[in-house]
Image (cartoon, helix red, strand yellow):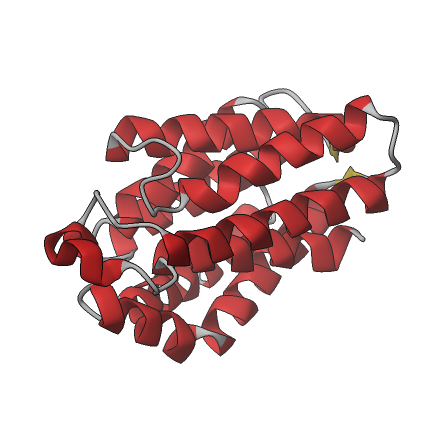
Length: 209
């Protein structure tokens, strides 16, 4: 796996497409336990990112992620903007001076993104958030690399673990954000942030695999 500037821009375009196609799905999930605007907000944010595409074509891979993060931070409404924005910006810091992303870079990227989300959201795994998708995805990816799996196998393992993590959020009570207000009634519903994080992971897999 080798992701250069052009491939990274294709991944971001794919994220925007997939978020747009799942706009209603994400908002429906959010309507069950929150404000009902997660899909609308995420779609708006990624549409704004697309407006930066000409600018990002002139940037290196670190700059592309930073521009994406800054745009999401300021253009996505609600709590998700600062969370995803910080995730992308922290991930960009791990790529300074690099001309491409290879498979072994991905765990560090995800770890930095997770750290950014924890910094902003003060959340941990198991609280029905984005992290319940990203933590197991990162761990599965790390394990696959250690086991000597090839790029496709490692990305597939990452995605499978992320899917299981998102599904897991249906079984637990929300303790963070607006969903925490309804307590036990949040059980049985997938966290919309976990769902959008899974869509972003799938968007990566579709391009690099």
